[in-house]
Length: 86
Image 1 (cartoon, rainbow, N blue to C red):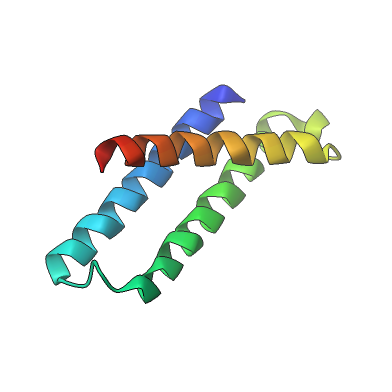
Image 2: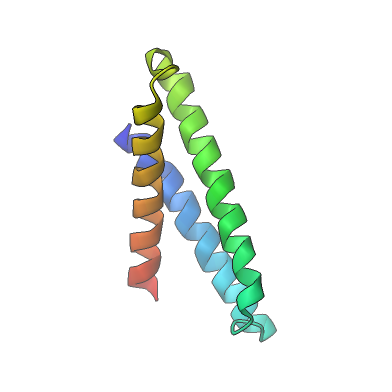
């Protein structure tokens, strides 16, 4: 579970850094309407992180709590790394 969280958390971090650097280079970093891209990235990465958990551990298929915990782990890893980056 933690391996999946770290892997997808790193994907999330890479995506956040990419969005930040591209928007900064394009001169639109102060445009708050572009924050929707962060939300879409977060949704996609969490979806695939939870999907990978269900593939690796099929016994968690009916367990809602394990999916929520996986999403929190993935989000925390990516967000904390991005916070350190900023």
